[in-house]
Figure 1 (cartoon, rainbow, N blue to C red):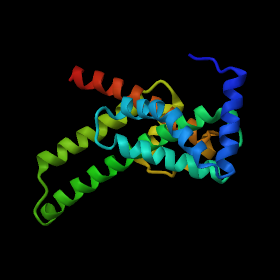
Figure 2 (figure 1 turned 60 degrees about the horizontal axis):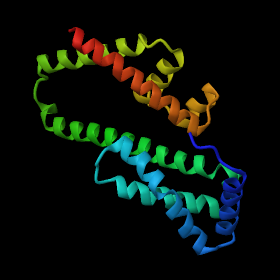
Figure 3 (figure 1 turned 180 degrees about the vertical axis):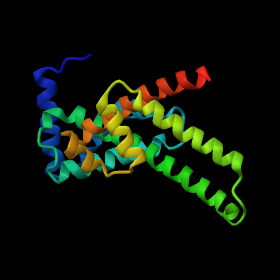
Length: 194
């Protein structure tokens, strides 16, 4: 882990001040300084997906917009601010993709709605749903169980969950990511046992 020096911190503070003041060269410096790190964060999560460049550009668009509007209260934490935006965009990307996939599945199934349901498919779906719920209930952390159930199954709003669990938006994203990882490991153990 790299330790920030006083001059690094001062540079970040000055860079933010210049951006707020409308200095376009400061915006270019921000992109040059953080593009490699932002690209690393996004690529690490998405692999070689074609959307990586789009998410990088979106990270900087959002960051510059927030900085210009004075939403960055602690300029010395600019690095964490940039990382947080990149991570949030990756999480949003996964959520959108999951929703699109479920909508696609619904659209593909829609024409079959007029026919009698296939009992085998219904049984498989029930079995899979039961397994998902079983794995969630076996997670050791109550917070992991709550956040996964409420966000993915009950489809509660992020803001409501954050308020109930005392989390910030960024902390929520980290907790959700870790919970998903622990869920995935436990799910894979269950599947291999069968």
